[in-house]
Length: 318
Image (cartoon, rainbow, N blue to C red; front, side, top):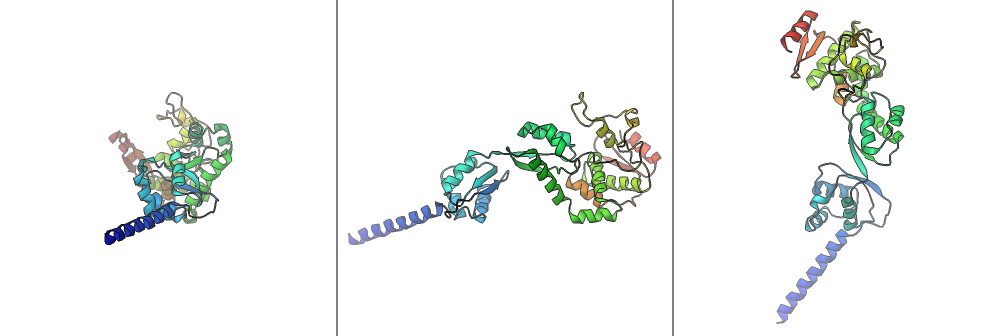
């Protein structure tokens, strides 16, 4: 009987120790009440969230956090977003914040959008005044990406975030390569913006960039439809900022952006290029034998060394 009682006492003691340890692992990390921004990206799982919380010194144990989440059936309740968390919060308090939902909004700005299109997106998602964004934004330098933006961000803060991202992506290495091609850094961005609208695949971007660079260097007109589309602006009938089918009259518009009438680059970028287009320009080869490119209705690209070959491609691949 005494042996049985001893075993019971030992079991109770072990349970008491384990429970104490468990509660300690769920408790706050410290008394530090300063908050830090913690971001849960889209698609992040419990394990990844736990690891990041541990790295940021917001929880004591990844394992205990994961077990607690599963024990309380919270796996599907953790929402992507940006949160202000503190080491003084217990695991349950952290999870209450994460489940409550972020006050920030994920915004995706597409490669090749002009600032008017970005303004429309920001207005519909965040209530940003389009006119204020257009006043502050600089065409070509608002980097297209997916952003987590606080709903109380000012226009100036949004523009700065987009420009800061551009400055990181348009690295010193890319700038150096572009200068080695005989272009200024701004000319590189202008050319990349045209490439962004004229090509859709990495291979096509590299070829189009090389052909446009060759035309620029030999003093030939760039003859880029995208620059005409930029002049024409919003098409109410198509509900698009980029007119699909250009007419002969369109090509005669008197504008410094008309690369059919004026040689050289347009005065500014015509859209906001992504990293792939900036890289395509940086890696362009003006010694390409081709002077012409054509994209058929199925999206395939065809190249010609002469105008005759170009016209033949158009006739062969409608």
